[in-house]
Amino acid sequence: MAHIKVINPNTARAMTETIGRCARAVAAPATVITAVSPAMGPASIESHYDEALAVPGLLAEIAAGERDGVDGYVIACFGDPGLHAARELAAGPVVGIAEAAMHAATLVGSGFSVVTTLSRTVGRAWHLAREYGFGAACRGVHACDIPVLDLDDPASDARKVVAELCASALEADGSDTIVLGCAGMADFCTEVSRDLGVPVIDGVAAATKLVESLVALGLRTSTRGEYAHPLPKRYSGLLHDFTI
Image 1: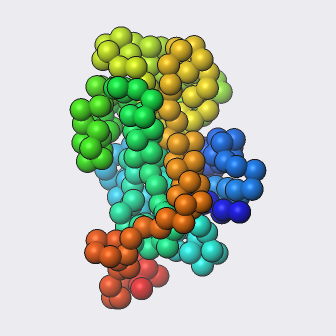
Image 2: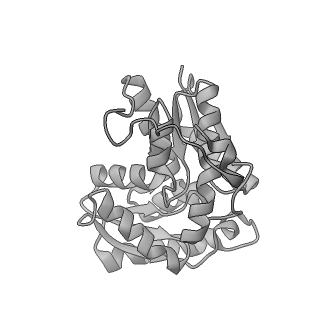
């Protein structure tokens, strides 16, 4: 039995519940999924500033998971904030949803398009695609310009807008796969895939199954070199509790 902690790095509890539900829907029956939000951080992550301030709360959840014997972690934000730092702290595998979704997309198609939230996040998605080695496979990044927290609003037409943008992205980019560029879109995946007739990849589901597989294979993050445990040192002020 594996215990996977799915961390939504923002503090929106309703979004965390949706993320947890989507992770549990794909996890094996014996896998335990714990979905959490940090006690501190931004309500949503829509800028580099938000992302930077989300990391301390995220790392606190990683540290708590290590004390609780968690086997692996999913970082459920498409910017994959704090991913490398989390790997230094965690004994088990840590996977970001952008990383997982892009990997999955290259296994089921020759090129993918990313459909994300605000236009200001387009550059971040491109940066990650190149960092992960998928710059050639990523044929376009498209923003629906719907704020993250509005995706979960039943009164909004977010699902319709996202579905229409996915369809136009396929045509504009000549791609054959869609990557949903926000954990808040996880609920849209099945419906949009059915309507478009192409693989539509939700990073929450992809990352959950990837972590589950790595745990089953007995694979952990290497502690040789870059991901070795951080060196002991004192942290001051608001970061005092992060002293190792």
